[in-house]
Length: 232
Image (tube, rainbow, N blue to C red):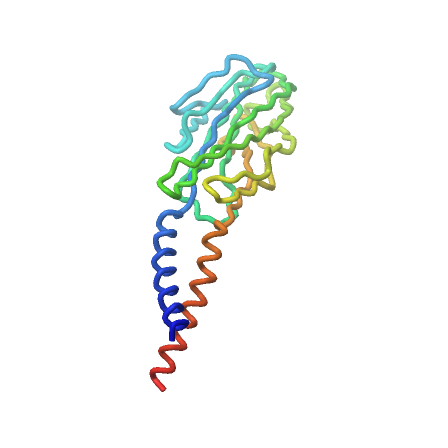
């Protein structure tokens, strides 16, 4: 009898606790910030629309400002557009924390310069009222390949090396985060189609929640057996 009451009480307590935990652990927030640029001059930040060659206008979304832009050694203007997001569920492997890359090149330039940038990705765990924050950095290197006259048609390309991510794992508010599969894409200059640098962030449920879930299942089973016996 005592054991059955324990099972029943455990089921009710865990159900309530998991409900509160779900509300507190709805997901995590992230944001990217350009930390440094190598191979560029006149590094600045912007918050409005910018124009690429041929009159193509890019208007970043409200979640993509401020962005960073600079002039590389070949005279091309490079735009690094940050991103942010909120309420990404725990336990979900999502390609997030991207930096979109655009290049506006003069139509008469020959640009074979190399440049790289490092961005800091900040993750906030809102569990327990928030305030738990962790960061990691990602670096990507690009090499321009622009021939005279080609930027106007949008055919000149930028090739990119694989992005570097470090560290590969962090813990925020007791929740482990695994950082993996960095990605970096090539793209055309003076073109509305951007390049992307990012990584996958995988979160793992807190161990305490897993234990509570196991205890809850035991309690639910006990409660079901008790009801079944009463019906008989």
